[in-house]
Every structure is written in C-alpha cells, then in structure tokens.
Image 1 (cartoon, rainbow, N blue to C red):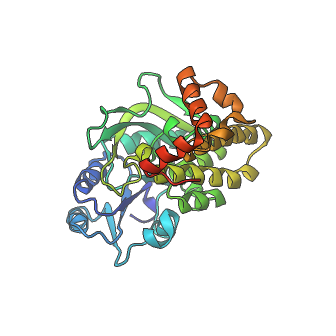
Image 2 (image 1 turned 90 degrees about the vertical axis):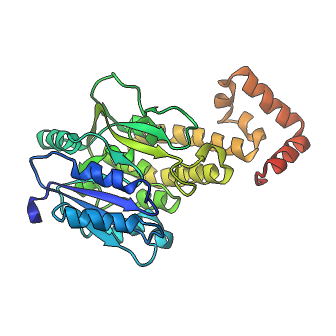
Image 3 (image 1 turned 60 degrees about the vertical axis):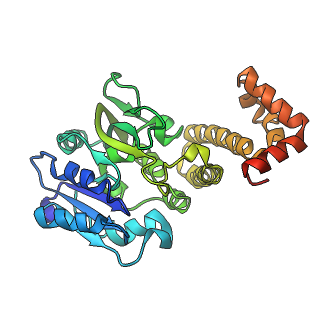
Length: 329
C-alpha cells in the first residue's frame, strides 16, 4: 500500500469476541476508489478475539494489519500509551479513522464520502457523521446519537465543548493525520482519566472546521460488557465521579490553548461540571453558593425541593448515601 494509502483505520480490541467480526466486516465492506488500511490491535484478549482477527488478516492481507499483544498495554498507561506504542508509528494514511472492536460501521460508502469531503475542503480538520446508539442490555430503545433530518452542517468549538455526545461519536471520525498523530497535552490528561474522544473533538475544532454528515453510518454499542466505558455510566457512582473529575482536569490543561471567547465558554462548562460533581458527591450546600446558584435556580421546583430537604437534614442524607454505597466526601 505504501505512500498511496489514503486512510488508516485504528481499531482497538479487547475481549470483543462477540462483536469484532461485525467491526471487521464493516471495514472490509467499504467501497472506495483509494487504498486504505485497518490497524487492529488485540490487547492480550483472553477470549477468541485474536483468532477472529487472524482469520480476517489472512483473508484480507492488503487491508487488515494486525497487532497481537502479549501484555495488556491499556492497563500500563491508558489509551494514549497504547496508541503511541502501536498505532501512531504504524499509520500510513493521509487521514485517520477510528472504530473500537465492539462498535461497527454500517455504510459501505462511509470512508469514500468522508475522504471525498476532506479532499475537496482543505480548511476542514475532520469529517464526522451520525451514529446509531444500540443498547446491548435493552435498557433503552435504539436511536440516533443526534436527531436526524437536520442536514449536513459544521460543528464548531462551542458545540464540542458542551460534550462529545452533543457532537459526534468516535466511530464517525475521519481526520487529517497531523491532528491525530501528535496529540496535545490535554489529550494525555483525558487519557489518564479513561477517555479521549472529547479531547480529539476539541483539538480538531481548534485546528479547522469539522463537517457533520447527516447520515447514520456506524453503530455504538452501549453496555457491551461490564468493563466497557459505556457500561452503566449513569448508575455507577465511582465511574461518573471519575469521568467528571477527568473532564475538569482536561479543561484546566485546555485553557491555555484558547482565546478569550473560547476560554469563557470552557469556564462556563467547567462551572456546570463542578456543579454536577458537587451534586453526586452529596455536597448540596455548595449548589446554592455562587457561581453555582444560578444553575440551581434554573432547576425545576421538585429538584430544588429535594435539594432543600437534603440540606435541612444532613444526617439523614448521609445515612441514605451510605446505604446506597456512595463514598462520603
């Protein structure tokens, strides 16, 4: 493939035996007029994931480039560590795409559409699209990440800063390699807290426009396994607390990269995230103090009534939290 490679697809896999075949089929089913490669890293899986990757690597040697780890790299340093060891030195494409081993692409024209757009619009740092959310445990009905039918459009920093889920999913990203293979400092901070998609979106939005195609071309599996990042995030106190703490830490490192207007938008989001953190920690007294009081006053009456009861009866509130298994702050 050599220098002619247009797109490098980066796929991480760990104990994805149930799903990796769908991911690999989504890759090899792409219809393009350019060569592309798929870098698949099996991170020392203990199930049959590696065997399925070997099957596809043997059948599609011009597309699938497998990496088999004898030790789990993610546990040694997080996602950026894994990517810097495996993917960044090996990717040959002009553009970089993502898809984890438990997600999949569902449109054979995905890569062609996105690469064509980036070829024709050099001022754009990336191209993304809509994604189907599939709840593996049937805890919610399937549906698109963003409402369909609103047309293709640009995604800017002020949308991305409000949260990755308001913009696009990782499986939809095709980006210029220079913005992926040399990640900024706040990307490493995000990785230390178990996520990178938010940081990727922010960095792309700071280096050009991002085009959103109003077309569902991938599937994001939620609650695919108990270890997955998506698994019961809203119902797991420790995981949610770590995520919000990580967002705040990442934004602190992000701030020096921003102009005054962008920094103000980021600080507004940081205030909202800190409010959420105080709430899940049970520190309800902080919610009525500046600058969080404005957020509190905008909440529905029922919400404010419950917070008031928690403030008036702190001993009962602490007992409730203890019985629920929440850590005390």
